[in-house]
Image 1 (cartoon, protein in one colour):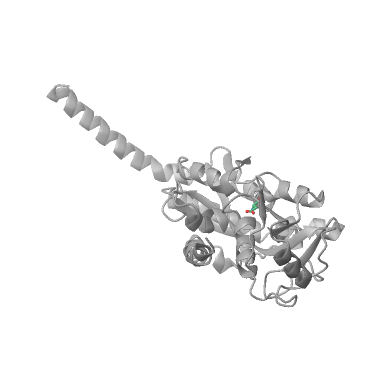
Image 2 (tube, helix red, strand yellow):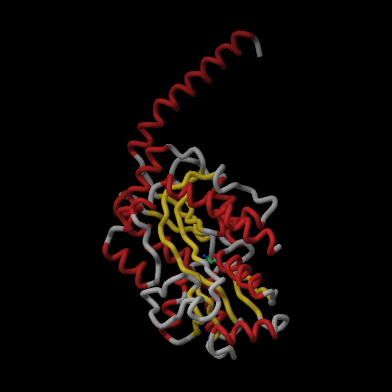
Length: 327
Ligand code: ASP
């Protein structure tokens, strides 16, 4: 390439850079001008999918564009999350992550293809999801004390369903198993939607799952719930005791679901998405559906991108401390 063409190429590059910098604010100002993809890292029908669909249906109204849910499964949600981390940072590809994909997976996957803080912009927290210990309805133990005795005595025979290494159901039950000192048979699924179907069918023995997946089944009597792993009972399941009431206070576990965008997504776009999510969480129909499924709706101060960044940092620290010793 001669010097003339080199200098022409330099001028073109400078102009392109200037032009793209000039249009970025305009692009953010007009955002969104087309439909948005929301990646859900688990199979349809599970807690993440249910929460994402409830909230994004309202967000779409606010943003004036459709939000298309894309269920991408595998590896406890990390396959989808790695893919989302590589998506264009233009606001048109988002992910509904959670305590597993954006915290517990960090200590569990040494070669994780992304880092929740380095490769994502936090958009906003959607819902807290208390964890329950659930079992097939004809599982022998009649209460949590019996469950503990039975699982300790039959650890090599009983099996626990989950949504893959690093999923909420996996890491919550890993915590339970480390407290009990057992390592039962592990049965992975592409999400706790399919896992719940297996539990209802009696094909697996028990599961630690997010409350939003369990309330309809518990109320229908198709599974049983031994306890909820939070300090207080959940208003959607007033008859389900806490783990403390049931004799296992050491087992405390609550997950959360939140929206993330690829790193570098412009701040005005993040702000628009955050505002739309916050508006959804203040909508009475959205609140009714989330609350009747046992979700904990975050207070406004906990819905900011900054609050989510702090939550992710703290949760990575917490689950690294919990899971490293558990191996
Ligand atoms: N939240 C996952 C799902 O929606 C389950 C999990 O993380 O265990 O299927």
